[in-house]
Image (cartoon, rainbow, N blue to C red; front, side):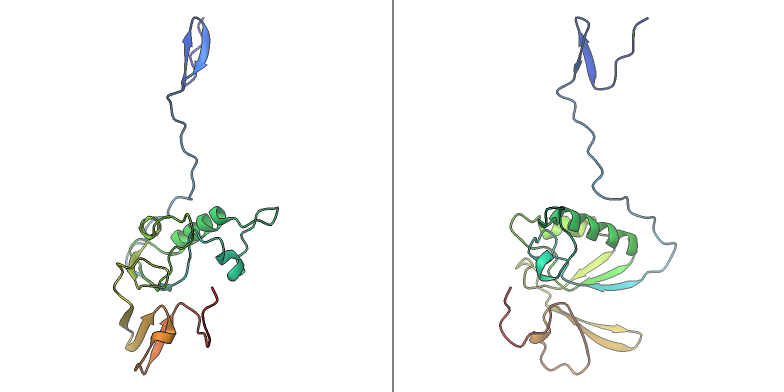
Length: 175
């Protein structure tokens, strides 16, 4: 009785050999997206995820470290994407107030936006691509006017609520 060959192997002269041309299945990097909500949508405002930015772990005291104390950017990216996709459904509206990704070796902003649920309306942050033109957005939410902007220090002549990403600073940005 002849044993059935294992997938990805073949036999030459009775010697079982692993197929060097067969690519292994990639390990799942992200948890699958949850199913869509039945109807309606929610509105979210988010800013400064800084995908791929190792130094943000120190600057913002994010808890992503290896056992040896080194920063763990991959774990941070994976956790941010997973948490986002378990909170935001595909039909939700997300106002993204800038600084999606940053850092040496970071993937493009478009790479991250494709992996995130929701209909994203982007506002340019100081670390975003120059081709992003929208630097603010005025919205009316339940009869209240809001100005959405990345850097609150750039707001002039607005007499209402401001929702922003970048922290307020009195001096020069040290980052």
